[in-house]
Every structure is written in C-alpha cells, then in structure tokens.
Image (cartoon, rainbow, N blue to C red; front, top):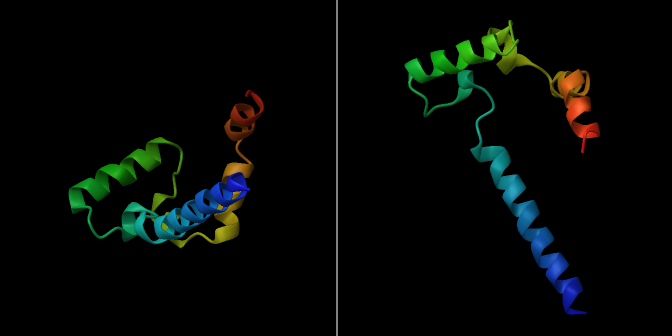
Length: 83
C-alpha cells in the first residue's frame, strides 16, 4: 500500500518538474533573454558546426519538424539500439 503512494508522489513531482522545465529552459539562443549577444553568437556558431546550417531558422521551426529531425537521425537510432 505504501509503495503505491510512493509511486504517486514521485510521479507527481516528476510531472511538476517537467512542466516547470518547459517554461524555464531556453529553446534556442535566438529567443533566450539572459544570454549576452556574444554568448548568443557563440551558441549559434556551435549549432552551425553541428550541422544545423539553417541556424537562423531554428527558432521558427514547427513542433512536428522538431520531432521529425531527431527521429530521422541515424545517430539517435544507433545510440538507442546499442543499449
């Protein structure tokens, strides 16, 4: 009986943390307020180095595009199947 309550408490804390993280964590360097312009430029250049050649359009992508990109990446599948 106590295990069930422990499950509910831990699940509730996890859901609360996830909802808070959606509003606190930055999406992209373009729309993050607490980065200086220099930090934002460095982050954008790192995104370009990582293969996001259209880094200026990252803040304008749709949710489905954001889901499709990692699902179509072969490294994501390789790392998920290797465990």
